[in-house]
Length: 281
Image (cartoon, rainbow, N blue to C red; front, side, top):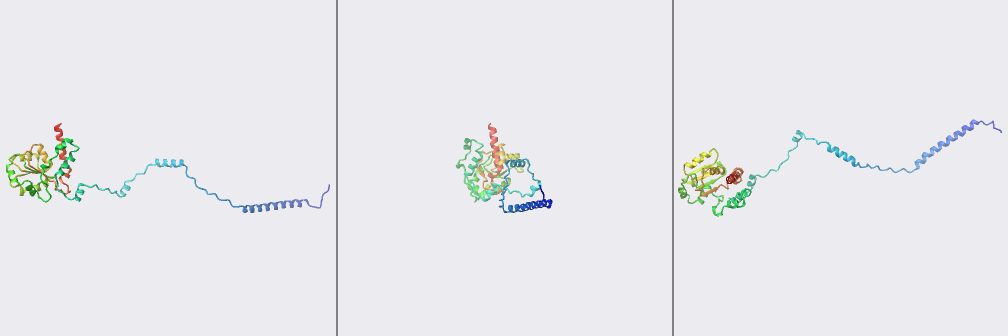
C-alpha cells in the first residue's frame, strides 16, 4: 500500500467542488433559455357567468318588500295639472246647430222619450196626440201677435163669448218669469179688450193667483209649467174653456236652451206622474 505523499490532498477536493458548482450554474442558465423557447400559451377568455335565478328571486322579493315612496305635497303641486277634456253641454251643441222651427213630430218624440220608462205601452198610446189637433207652427218669421192672429182669426168673437171664471181661453207656456213678461207685452196688438194674467211663481204667492182668477174673467194666461201645474192641481185654474195651448218652443235663453232643454221643466212632468200614480194606487 502506497501513497503519493507529494500531492496535497485538499487541493484535489477543492478543485472537484469548484467544478461541480460551475456545472450547476451552467445548467441553471440553460434552463431559462429553454423556457423562453417554448410557445406562449393562449389566454383563456373569461366570460362573466349570468347571475343565478335564486339571486334574482331574492332581489325581486326585496323590491316587493320595499314600500313605494309617497309623493309630498310640494312634488304634487310642482307637477303640471292634466288637461281634462270638457264634455259638450247643451249650449255648445245648440250654438253650432242652426235654429229650426218646432213641429208636431218634435213634441210627440219628446213625450215618448220621457214616458217610455215611466208608463206602460198602452198608457203611452193614450198620450199620443192626433195630428188634427195641432195648428200650423211658427216658421220663425212671426211675432207672437202675428202668429196668434194667424191661428185664431176670430179672436174678437171668441173673447166676448167667454164668461167662465178661474179659466182661460188661450194659455201660453214659457220657460221663465222674465219671458212671461216679455210675451205679455207682445200681446198688445192681438188681445184687444181681453185680460191677460201672469202665471209664474216669482214674487207671487199661489193663493193670490187663485183669488185673482176667481174674482174676474181672464181670457189669456201666460206662465211657467211649474206654476200652471200647481194651479191646476189646486183647482185654481180650470181647463174646461181652454181652446188654444201655445208652447214657446223656439225661444232660447242666454245659454241657448229651449224650454224643453231645461231639466227643471222636465222634473215638473215627473212629479205629476208620481202624484197620479199615488192617487190611482
